[in-house]
Length: 162
Image 1 (tube, one colour):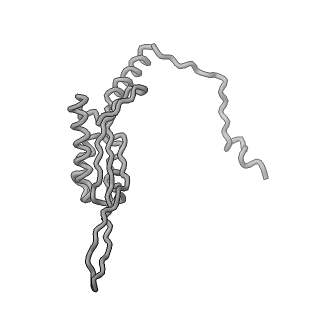
Image 2 (cartoon, one colour):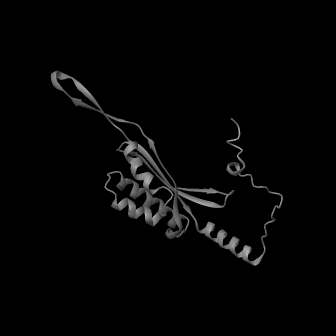
Image 3 (cartoon, helix red, strand yellow):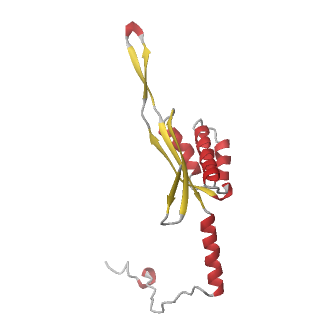
């Protein structure tokens, strides 16, 4: 899926995995490691982590990158995981037969995982433009000479009052 915001000129591409059979707490261990990292770095981290939750997260990150390259023709080297979240899903309920004809309810938790990738090539071009414009003198900052520095420790402002 693709989400465009015209205010910031940023393009976000996301992949959503629903009803994944594991608890949200266990899936958050893997998600917390890859948040705000590049696409290639997150793939390496997820492949080397020993958690069972890393495989579905890896599939979602890969799917989001394929959405970006196929639908938006973005380069995978410029993608960063801008947002990754795990929400609790419905619990799958199973009945297990017990002694004397009774049954025992087993609840298997599920979770929904959302991975959002953002293209940072626009930000790199903006930063290069800002550096160029500062060097060439297009952007100048006016210095305010009326600023005074208040040092609370040397003036004794905090510790004067007894």
